[in-house]
Length: 92
Image 1 (tube, rainbow, N blue to C red):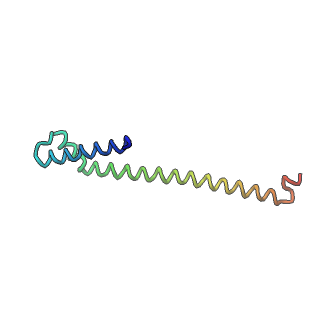
Image 2: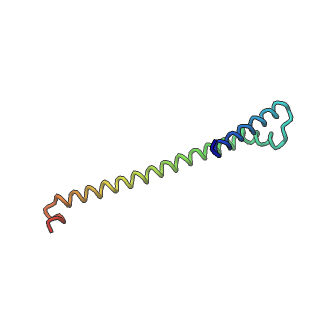
Image 3: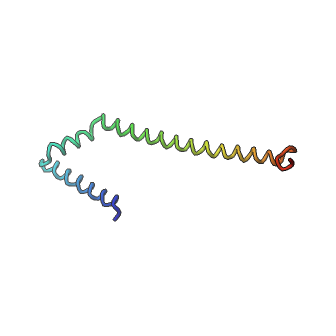
């Protein structure tokens, strides 16, 4: 198992234990507070904000990638025009 897989497994165990404690009424105030915060509107807005920021970063990355491809296409087109022009570099 990878370290990431093991970590995910441990997190799942902790969540299961917290759920059991909440059901039995034995959960600590920290566990209760943690899950109350997760359910708050502010937390939901924060998660939505993070998702949107990730989408924005992905879009910016794709735009940069596309701009580089367009730049290469223009460079190739200009080079092709130079080769076929009557005053091209090959004729000098």
